[in-house]
Image (cartoon, rainbow over all chains, first blue to last red; front, side, top):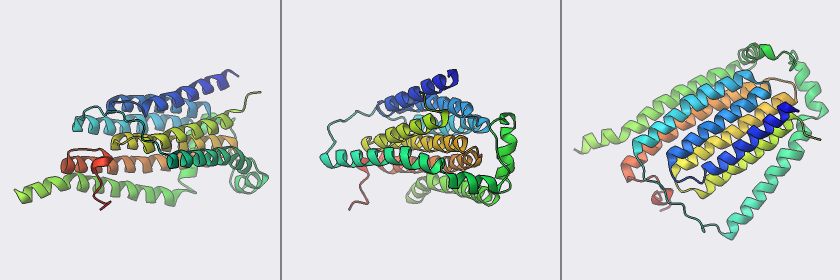
Length: 184
Length: 102
């Protein structure tokens, strides 16, 4: 029960902080709030038993990606954006209502019905050695053994994707400077 | 009767995803839109890990690893595009970027 209460506190805090994040004026404040949200999510992953994911969330998301965000925000040196309300039209309200209902339906009924159905648990899970939550101290071992056997091709393709993203971001960010040199 | 931990995780991921959608729809600043996209990706990660705990498998945690790698690529390319657009237009408001609209 204590685990569930702390999980609920972290989740409610994450939702409220994200709602606060999208209404901030300064981008740096929003980035700092997002770092706190990611650390709360890492705590939730740890309570769910995904220890490797919790550590990777802190190192990669809150450590690496958000540093790049904060770096770019400070590099651009933006003025605070004035919040503009009163832009919501009726069509947008209808679309939001439809999307909210659809997400609620998918997230509660269909998703849980599929996840807890007998088809999934008999065919997919028994196809490979079972994973028991009692073996929490071997989480990293389980994740890595699955990552380098069944998901090996996806792993290699993701490595090429990251290489392409590195080269692409360098080319995109450098292009304006090359044009300036040519024009001048 | 309190729901179990993975069910709570799926509910929270739903709420976080909705907040991210609101951020993308109602902000006019590209940096805020990208931060909201990060919130949406985190909500998807939370749903993956909750499903992985719910089904007693570990596949969701491996997929979360891939989502994290794709999010890193998206952040790098998107921020490079923001820098390039800021050099060209001196603004990152999407109302100022309507070249493709004609």
